[in-house]
Length: 327
Image (cartoon, rainbow, N blue to C red; front, top):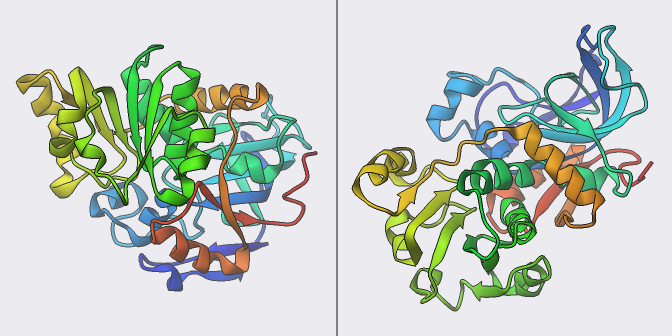
């Protein structure tokens, strides 16, 4: 099988497409033929090995996994003898935040990991674009604030994978959403459910005169100190980035003591539960993925370079044969 491989941390030019032996599923694993996957900010962090603290999970001096990739959509080709929840032929999507070797034509994954069947009403490509960003929006941010109908939330970076998912999910919970993005995506973001949109190139959203129950920075380009005036008493700030000097890892402790506006660190939890909710919303027509562009596997370095610019809209896909087929 073909796979994107690297042996050290670094920029996209260290990636190469190699022929590897197809994996064999263990007793509790399934073998998946991958039809679509994404290149996302998580993948970029793992490729570069930055921030350095992430290497305690991905490999201190060199990456533990040679094949890159954190999410996938595909079809089960074979199952281990003890697998009960899936069968050969099932269309599935899944995620592994520290790497799952999904930038390859085939992968194996344990039955109990973050893997579920794909809704019948979407293609493999659409399914792949419903995983990483949506999971982080829900499990790292929205679940942390337990949103209530009628509350107000601001999403910075609303046109990205996490941001576009956050806008839709907050709308599902009945939250009044203000979205911040670039001019070219204002209409798209509003179509996802944002009631107000702010063009960051023309207006500093931190000077907004509206107050919010929570502010989500899904691109990690603000700070708590700048966003604090936007928060209502008891309001919450969550960023997808650790922030300068990893301040967002420490501010949750100090803000819990010193004030009624707090910071929560965006560590995901209940990831599989989040994916089940996302699947349910897809089936109801209440969640739709945003796809920017697609690359074949042999152009994956170009995909990484584009994602690293920070200019993508929604998701960037790596596609394989028949990835656009719904069945």
